[in-house]
Length: 365
Ligand code: ATP
Ligand code: MG
Image (cartoon, rainbow, N blue to C red; front, side):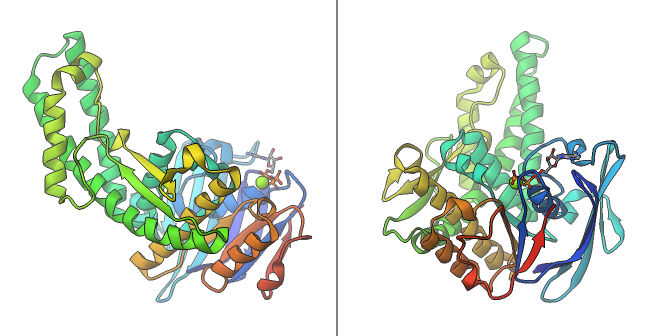
């Protein structure tokens, strides 16, 4: 898929933009603080109805204005879609082909975008919550069922935790209601966990191939999912995962009541990256961690293609300056001709652009 006609009003410092993107490579070049990342973020917002930088949509509205509007025409192999997202101080609205969508979940996934920025290093170095957010965001945009179960899980988890707190304070007494909530939560947890296993298996395989290509090194990259409920395995059926999560909730019932919170489940699980069997969080160099993070994003391109038959658009923010010449070439070779790519940079010099035939260059000022 690719984004053709694209327009923006009042998105951060971008007052007004109306353009047709190149189906292959678009380069946004400009000095610092001109709006290059804002432009990538606007494309990302059109795809996912949220920013990668903030959870507060209000920040996205140009200072002093009342709304921000982003619109784009997405070309897929079979259809052309007109997508629109409007952000106001009261909330956001979305349209597909001028028809307003009551549910964001019906809209997300029409345009798939994979973004890579320097902050993605935190995926390897940072806290487990970042890796869970990664799974929820990325799997959510490619699989509507995942999006549904992940959000349902958050909802029922809040409900169960509130009830646990009431039990802990003695404000509630009925433990049967707790059992009902735990049973419901275990069922949804199993749907989330089994999908995470399935998608990660695919990601691990293609991330390992991408790593070998772009890092120009022989180490093997693997991704392993670590469920917080002991005894769950990658080849377990959803039913068997449900049984194990439920048994775990029952076993820890009194501790959960005492602590007023649910101690295990998808919200406590983690993801591990290994190079030749060694934990990358602990042992990989800065450059290796960068290559791992990039490989995972590239693997997502394959995953989206595998599931939908379409390649997503790729947004690369400040990535080129971080890679040496050989790795830049390897990256450009890897994506060339596959996916529509947007690249920000402050400087065209020293970058191996020869691989890209005729990029469209935007000077952002
Ligand atoms: P760099 O090369 O440093 O990454 P950039 O071109 O990517 O720079 P952006 O992150 O896109 O820069 O930000 C451009 C400018 O947008 C910043 O100076 C910032 O102050 C401004 N900005 C951010 N939010 C808003 C807003 N809501 N309204 C107006 N301007 C904003
Ligand atoms: Mg920037």
